[in-house]
Image (tube, rainbow, N blue to C red; front, side, top):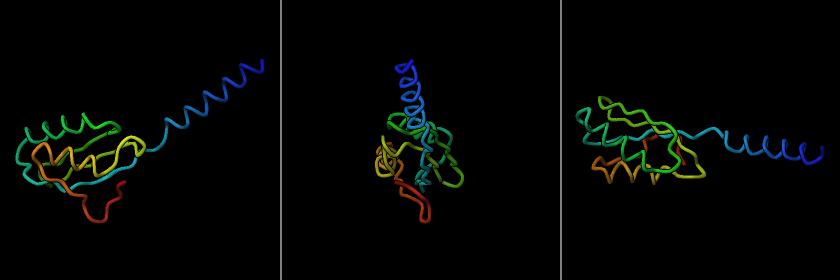
Length: 97
């Protein structure tokens, strides 16, 4: 019985660790002119470990990314977008890691 209880407590603790709220960053992105640009950026972000969600607004030239701070950071996210051909910088006044 004791092993079962310990196992349940450990499982609950691990679940809480994985359920951490992701951080969000908003990036100003240059050169986004069409829907194909957003597809390229999505593919670049798919390769960044820890990215949990992304929203791309080509009209406003903004990319919003939710991410796990234990697996990545804003610099790695901005670099991935920039390396895909779209220079990205953290938008002033937004929260990022």
